[in-house]
Amino acid sequence: SQKIEQNSEALNIQEGKTATLTCNYTNYSPAYLQWYRQDPGRGPVFLLLIRENEKEKRKERLKVTFDTTLKQSLFHITASQPADSATYLCALRYNFNKFYFGSGTKLNVKP
Amino acid sequence: GAVVSQHPSRVICKSGTSVKIECRSLDFQATTMFWYRQFPKQSLMLMATSNEGSKATYEQGVEKDKFLINHASLTLSTLTVTSAHPEDSSFYICSASTSGVTDTQYFGPGTRLTVL
Image 1 (tube, rainbow over the protein chains, first blue to last red):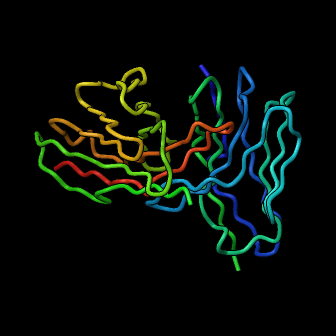
Image 2 (cartoon, each protein chain N blue to C red):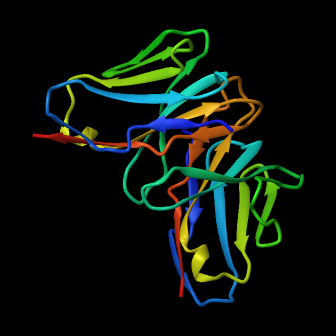
């Protein structure tokens, strides 16, 4: 079965640094991959989407890369701020309307 | 745009009772709605997918008679947890998507269910 791995340990970084989160998957590459932010007790909020034929996508301070050879996506937040502290989930979309989520990585940005 | 609401946000009920959770897309028509369950520090587990006007498709291991899903309109889906037990206590999240190229999901804020 499809497996999605995100670092279960929290990532602690200093304000202003770049945070890099990893999403690895097994077996088949998805049609596209999404990153979400989830705050405690809240539903996930969509951030970025990258398709299988795209290498990189940017949105303001966010950057996502997608390497289908390595079966990996990296999610970067540049010039991180304490307000960026949250859990970040990756989600892979396969056949029609079938999404699989990773368990998320908690990011702590310290002032 | 693309706002999804859920009601109630929190519910506490006695074992054996049924609980209904509503999911509404407020400013768009959702051809498909999803219901997820999330345990603490774990991933979202898809329970079922529902399309307006048709029966929901349940994931393996999810009892359809236990978790009743109704998608009556393009803006409303309901999840009813029947004869709830303490092990049903969890965070339930719905999402809605439009029939677009990217099928981006827009999530509701979630419902915390506690069964005593």
